[in-house]
Amino acid sequence: MTCEIKSTNSYYDVKKSSGSSLSDFLDKRLSQVKDEQGFLGNIWNGIKEFSGLGQSASDCETMVEKFNAGKISFEEAVNYIDSFENKQENMSNLLSNILTGVGAIATTVLTSGTGTILWKTAISCGAPIGAALKASINLLDRATNDIEGDEFNLKDIAKDAISGALTGATSAVSSGVGKGIEAGKLSSSLFNGAKCGVICGAASGAGTYMTDVAFDDKEFDTGEFLLNTATSAFVSGSVGAVVGGGMYGMANVAGNVGEKVTRSTAQTIVADSTSSTSRKILGQAEKNVLFT
Image 1 (cartoon, helix red, strand yellow):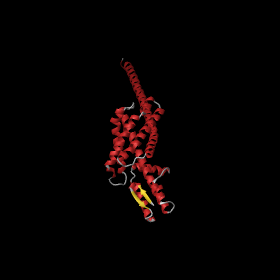
Image 2 (cartoon, rainbow, N blue to C red):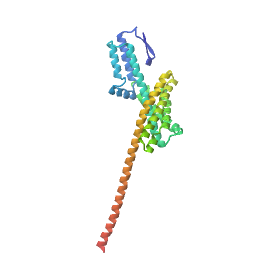
Image 3 (spheres, one colour):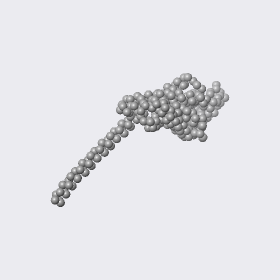
Image 4 (tube, rainbow, N blue to C red):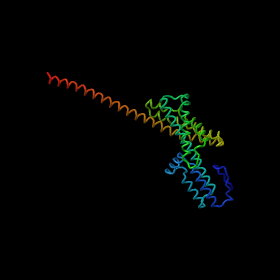
């Protein structure tokens, strides 16, 4: 029986190996996957460790222990670790796309205002911002893993810049969060934020996948492509709704604070003016009494 290890593109012959060597292989395999995790992967793994939802590094360690105890086969253990690696990689890409999209929206809105963002602005502003953000985020992610020199992988930087530009432009042009803020409607901000998230999430997921295919890091698979696109759209849409509501809330808080400060300032000016006028009248009265 032969087991293919996808991450190393090698084959491991179970029949020709002893139990101890198989156990050593699983330990090394899991250690390799852990070393690949940068800050994005570690954040996601930490959430799963805390919540108990999804495959975590601790679950992988448990699977290795079960293999050592003879409760599961080698294939089950190594496939579980492979699955953990793939899910971590996919979620890290998704988190990177979300951060890139949110950053591109925020920067473009601050630069161009809260009105409708056209493709011309999205391409000239959103695309370069997205390219720089995603390349920087993933550069930091690779710099925080335990693989020496991984952050300077020029091929990965080029891939990040290409998919980041697509994410940035799509996020910016599909963003309608500002309309909800201008209209004073929370529901509009939530809806537009979710719509933006779905659009840019689908584009980001599809773009990232096709970039991997173009760089020969993946073989195109229709099912995997559609799943990756749909998952990215769903998660980004949920995040987009939160971002839309958050931006609306911040705008309202800022507006209320500004209104209170303006009202308070106006009241102070009126009070000072009244006090000053009263003082002038009283002063004139005192002068008339004392010196006439």
